[in-house]
Image (cartoon, rainbow, N blue to C red; front, side):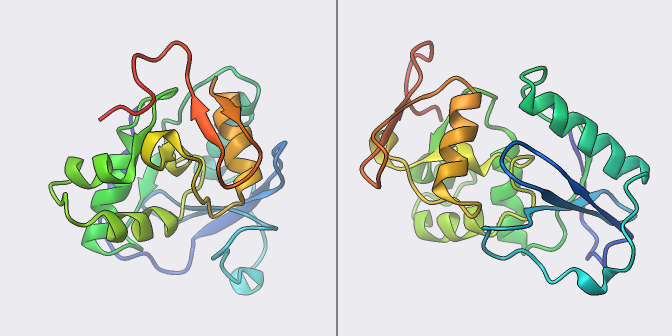
Length: 194
């Protein structure tokens, strides 16, 4: 998976569109530098107030390609995304966490602790969790691949039921339907990769 990442502070999105998915409509937003947002329209924390962004432009090249790749992902035809990304809405620390999320291979998972170690901040596990929760590009920057200790199913900004669905789409087995749920990947050498 390859992505181009911009570091400039984003203005109001240059264009936005709604992308239907099996898990609910996604609001996609792009700046001139790249895709800057993907949020579930309903049931997600931190979905921006987008009513004043003007008319949707689903034909915008970045948005059209994001929607095409999203459709292929949900159809099981692709495992990740290859889009220009603009992560500049985050702090330097958040951007480091989001870049590390992009390195989690499809079908792999990691823990918050391993992610903190990966960015060179092993004591910042809680701060990493907060940055993961602030991810503005749900599904595309794969925060759903971050698990608690021992494969525990932890929170997800789009709702835990969506995290379960995304993990199952990627071949994970989810045991239990509550906060004590665990995930496993039969073909992976370890539940959590570093």
